[in-house]
Image (tube, rainbow, N blue to C red; front, top):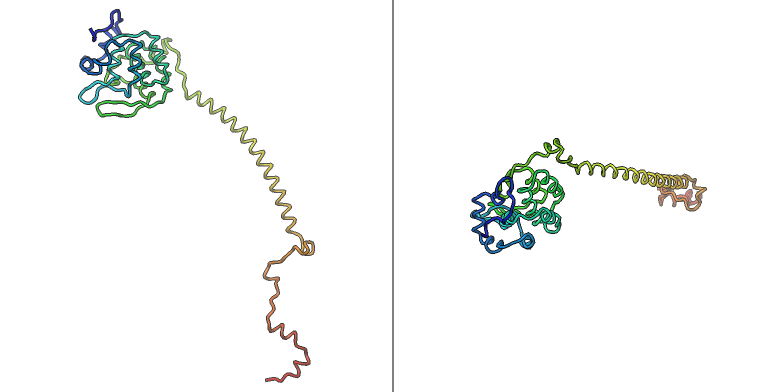
Length: 268
């Protein structure tokens, strides 16, 4: 009884909800210790506590052992919670693994239109997720995980149901066109460029006034340097070597001697 689908559950894609997980993996989940100890008699409310304890997503690892993420996914397929409850799972921003679990369940069970409308907003979530598979642990991100759910055929070792192309749904009028975040970013960049232009004009005006003040101060300094020595007075000091007079000791000695003395000195 613990492995049977809840009474009154609706068939998903024409089959029992638990049949969306392959038989081999489903039997390994039934035999795992986590399923027997922690997944017994879980409800849509109590499964939240188990989802908050998750530390990774993934399929099977090691000796084909299922991850806790797969066990809780199969439990959701077994109890088949209502759509409003799954929306609450997705809106729990602080619990990323609960959100990833709900996204995986929605991809398996919901219509294509609902899948696009509910999962595409999660492409803005860039938080890190730990993934566990046969190769061990690896790092991924929430937006990459959601993109895999929307584009790939197998995720976490589970074959996903066929998903109609978004373009086909748009042509049939079942879903509106997807709003590109790139266009919003470009529009914001245009507004930012206008602000930068105004800031650059203000900075250029300030720089122009500063240049004018610098030119006036430079002209004043040049006018002071062009003064003649007589105008400058005692403050003017010539440092040019050509204008300095060099006097030798011999010339000073010759000027100090009188002409009479020079005539009376004997010649050698």
